[in-house]
Length: 126
Image (cartoon, rainbow, N blue to C red; front, side):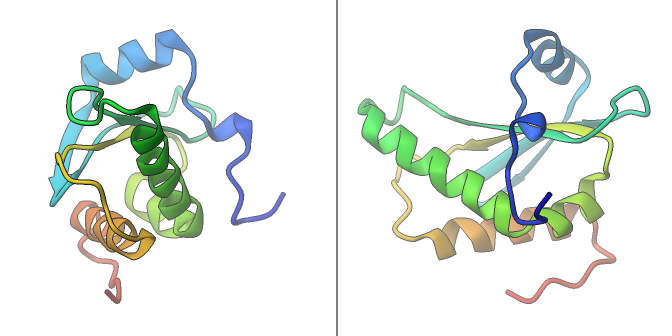
């Protein structure tokens, strides 16, 4: 398996996992990205999902674009994510701003800040 991939086994899909995440998860926010996560030894691998508010982005095209950018920033920086949140974790990323991001670089820099906020010992070049 390639290290820069996002296979279906890493996608957060099961309702029971999502319910557990919202019940016991911890929140972290950086700029316009928010994450809820939970670390557990009961989880066999890490899973991550993305979500964008329909309240702020009425058009599905805009929501899908932001979700693609969030997934791509995760995919490109998966090793930093694993360092910060662990190999056995559930997480969901949210875009909480009312503004559409201009480029992947803005979303990616915020994702890197998020990972460095969780794990301050890792040095991330922004």
